[in-house]
Amino acid sequence: MTNSEQRRLRRSVAQHGIAVVVFAMLALSGVGVAGPGRYGMAVPFIVTGVAGATGAAVIAVAVWRLQREEAGVRPGGGTTNEAAQRTVRLAMAAAAVVALIGGWMLAPQGMDRGFVISVAAGLAGALALFSLFAGDRPRTADHPR
Image (tube, rainbow, N blue to C red; front, side):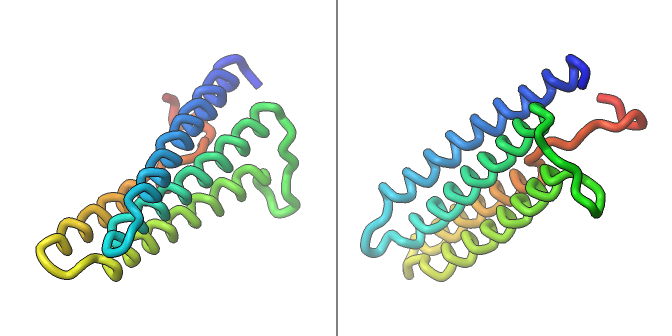
């Protein structure tokens, strides 16, 4: 592994570590909001925060293992790290759908309903985008930085 690859992997681990902290704070803010009549706002924050923090942590560990060259090669091709990252990204995308549906179903009646649904949609969209772009994808010779 070259020096530039090691730097790229260290940078990826640091970025996913920051994402863990941000998503954990998002989950904690949802727990702080939770209360009777406010579950429509709390549930999307909690689901998005827990799914994002867990996903970012698993991806950071997978990248860390790749950096340490401890990952084995699966019989079907590819490394276990790639499979773990793919599975975690899929689970985060599914959690984004759950957050959106939960926010819509638990949104209060009245003038706040649209706001709560739009916040749930924004959080779900952010988690879906993170699941799309998260992980470390090796660069190929055909596509340099």
